[in-house]
Length: 126
Image (cartoon, rainbow, N blue to C red; front, side, top):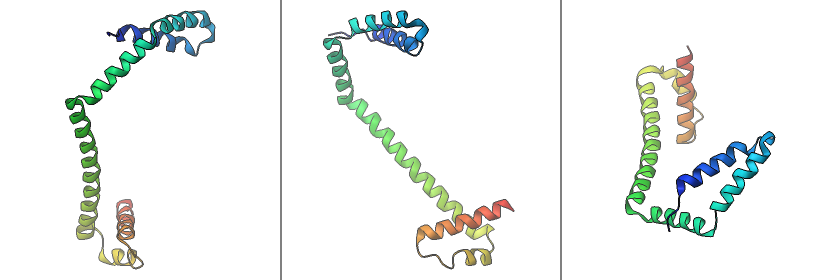
C-alpha cells in the first residue's frame, strides 16, 4: 500500500493552521474533514509499517547507534575537559595556600572537584 505522505502533511498543516483561530472555525472544520477522509485504518497501518521498516533497517540502526555513541563521547569529553581545567588550575593558577584552605574539609572526589571549582571561580573573578 502506498501512502500519500505529502497530501497528509498538507492537510495536517492546514488543520494545525486553523486550530487555534476561532474566527475561521468553518475553514478548520473543512480542513479537519478532509484530513479525516484521508486518515483511515489502511493509511494508519501503512504509516506504522513504514516506521517499522525504517526501525528495522540496519543503516538506520547504525545511524542511531552512532548518534548515541557521539552523545556519550561528548559527555565524556566534557567531563575530561573539566578535569583537565581543574588540573591546570591547580598546577598553574591557584595559590597553594588558597587551595589548601578550600580542601581542608573535603571527604570525597566530588567535594574535592567542587572545592577546586570554587577556588577557580574566585580566581577568575579577581
